[in-house]
Image (cartoon, rainbow, N blue to C red; front, side, top):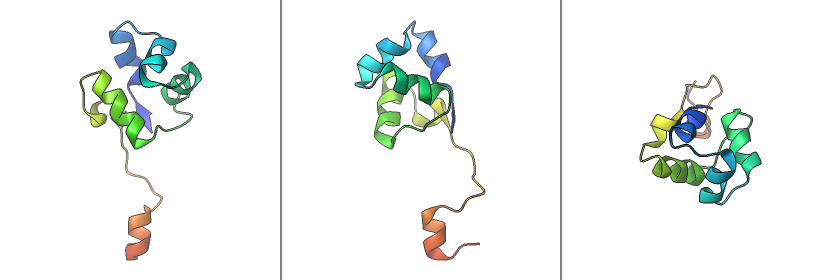
Length: 78
């Protein structure tokens, strides 16, 4: 999932370590999210968005996936 986390973090003058401390996660976790190596849980994404007084959609960019979601699979959507 693409994101604007680095842009938001730098706009507040925070380091990855400082943001991690505010969220209760490691600097490495923040780096992995910024580098799009992993996706945050919905709860972490929510907490991140609240720090920046933004919506989740403003920080994280949700793109349509070619892979079917679990809901689509269970409904038999093609």
